[in-house]
Length: 193
Length: 341
Image 1: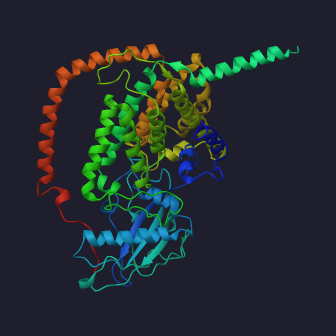
Image 2: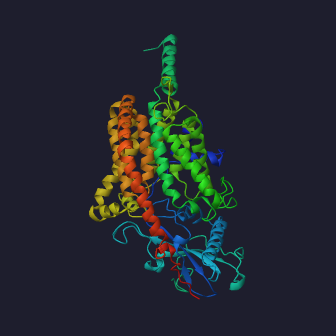
Image 3: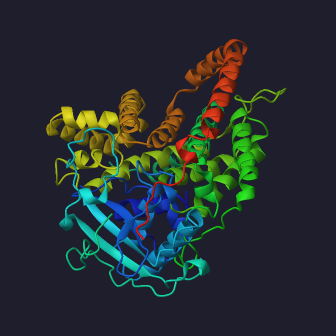
């Protein structure tokens, strides 16, 4: 009663955590915020990599990195972006993901050159834009208009000679773009493939 | 009318006795025992689906947030790849034994530990359902189970048990319904816009059936479903608490969760888990009847159908293995990602 029901009443009415209660416990009181908002758009995330300076940005295949779909047809990055999408202060999280993506790429494709940069792109999928032909399928990034996309952050790595690729080499990280930057950064500058 | 102090004391005593009986009275264990089986099945099905991508889920093969980026949240270490099959044996073994009612007092702790571990080892895939499981298992682990639905031979007649776990679980599910409705109104948009559900049905959760409904039904139909959903959530405490209204609540809830399961991909697990809570609101006689009928059906099923299923499964496994190991299977092909050099 004291641990669950009484705190749940407070959280239920206010949608706020009880001050002073440990997070491990607060986690179990947040049960109620399910589908409350009208969605003007559904955010769709893409991971892109660049392999040489000023080269093209390649959209990486999601299935290589995230296969589990816990939230409808979304993969585990859905929760990641809930935490690290709009926040400027937690850009460390994006840097960690970018470094992991690079490392995973190098494991999967050891004969390919390592990415020198990884960036996260968000596209805004308007409900009903495809006429709902069938179940949800992630649209290709090219199908979005320029104004419907934004680069969330770009993460640079040291360019290594292909013979000395090292998976532990995330060097400098540019996480300046914490908010939507529609139009500020030219998404099509190097082309989206 | 002015009550005398004696009358006030009597009323107060009556209220205390009623409350005590409501929260701590003795009941037949059939409801909690049937709930255990239903919840066990829903956890089993849910984790069987997740297990298909177990390497990504629970080992360093997948991305897992480090403690440094989640400083205020417990993040448990993931398993080494070689440890995955062993963990699978513990997870699914304990779940199956729990459903079968073998040594439930101890096995339920093992299930609770496993569910808690996967919840905090991979924060990215855990959601409300994991919380439901942990809350339910915490309640169940503290009381005796396996009185009726069990493979163990019981010589003594079933004892009654305290009703408090049932009350906690009933209150939890009714709170969830009510506050979901509350937050949809006061922290959400459900009364501000008539197409909230329509926008949600067309997104990441959209199944083929949902797509067909979105194409076929005009928007006002979605508004009606939205209103019906909100009405159900807000009135659920009354519908389930008042005995005469309970059949309406159960039926309405069943329709509600069936629609969620059909229209929103992967939320069938959520629906199954929540529906298992409905058992806690059913009459004990009804549950005894279901148990006796199920016992005979299972006996017949085991004798006739299980051998056929076993043979069929073996054939299917052989066929799928042959397909998967074939050189021309897409999974065995090199990646189609082209790198611009």
